[in-house]
Image 1 (cartoon, rainbow, N blue to C red):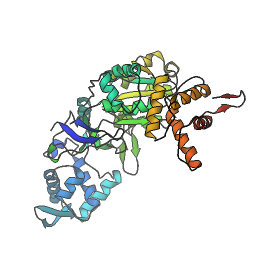
Image 2 (image 1 turned 45 degrees about the vertical axis):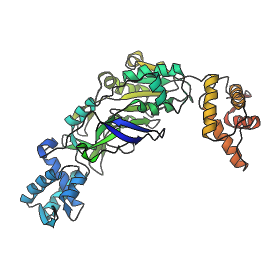
Image 3 (image 1 turned 180 degrees about the vertical axis):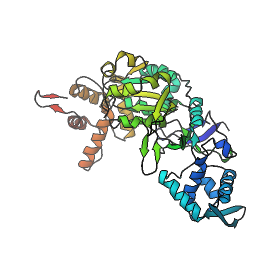
Image 4 (image 1 turned 90 degrees about the vertical axis):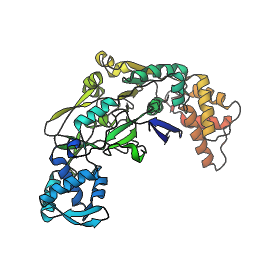
Amino acid sequence: MNRLRGVSDTTSGERIELEYPAYRPPIPRDLAELKLSQSMPTDLLLRHLRTRAVSSFSSVSESMKVSPRIVEALVEQMRKLQLIEVKGVTGLDYSFTLTREGRNLAAERSEMCRYAGPTPVSLDEYSRAVRAQRAQVKVDRTRLRAALSDLVVSDSLLDQLGPALVSQRSMFLYGPTGNGKTSYSERLTRIYEDSVAIPYAVEIDGQIISIYDPVVHRSLPVEKDAALDPRWVVCRRPCLIAGGELASSSLDLRFDNSSGTYVAPVQMKANNGIFVIDDFGRQAMLPRELLNRWMVPLDRRADYLSLSYGTKFEIPFELLVVFSTNLNPSDLADEAFLRRIPNKVYVGDVDDLTFDRIFERESSRQKIPCDPDGAEHLRQLCKRHGGDSLRACYPGDICRILHWISEYEERPVHATKGEFERAVELYFAQNTCAGENV
């Protein structure tokens, strides 16, 4: 049982196999093996029972993600304190409910925190897991080309990306807009051949931090006999992309007043994966502010967070940060910071051959019939209107415009020279003062 079989890559549609996580937390057998503060499991059980009229060992075990044996121990403790009463037996399971004293205590505990999700793991265990699951990449040009098979990528670019990925150190992807920096970034996780274990939540100083996010983390099916602690979710290595909305608050814990818990910052959610900062330099926070915030984490692979009342703690910073920008890196960061990002990969305009190959792929994908010399004609039009430069985005964008024109005129789409000229006129803006295209 070393590989997860039949996992679908939603970007390429390919069926792949991934190795099980390097860190496989065993199922805790008793309360001590949860390694949590003494009151945490009890308070969590109270909040779970408060939401139900009657519960059972099996239902609480499933919702708290702990074994029935642990639930039984908690229920026995609370029964002796007259917080729980047993209502009956169904098969081999017991049904029980809170007493009046139990409901009062549950209401009191819920005033401080309303979290009633899976049982958290300790900060020490989370840190140990992240470091154990540090990415180890073995990739060459052939494997990298296969990972990016749905894109047209030159050998020279592959040979820049390859060593950067082997290093697993942060990188700049920079160059003119429209040449695929974001497309490359969001596909880089394909080089990883293993999965990772991510906890639903982490406890620190009696506080709960939610980590697992189904929007960010793609969970994988696990065999029932895998014997993994159910407080952890087996996932693909995460890839989190943040654009202009990234603010300084995104990098710190956020306290949710409605639940009384904390939400993990973006870099904590991206641990053991990739964090892409798209259009770097155009965020709500200033580039220098972000770079100063991450000067130490990028260098030492450790970050420091603070709870709302000042308690500070360390978390691992085990992620590949990709700064994607169409600005010059030297205009965004000083020499001291650039030294901490050893990989600067330039993604420039494409050559004629690459442009034609992209067009052929796009016209086929978008089912557009084309004249034999269509790619060459479109290329010449783009050079004339785009200042003699060829961007990787031109073929796909213009093919979509061809579809819009045909839909507007209620006729089948066809890429003739005349249609290309209409589409290109729509696509490129004109400098009306100078009479030039821009």
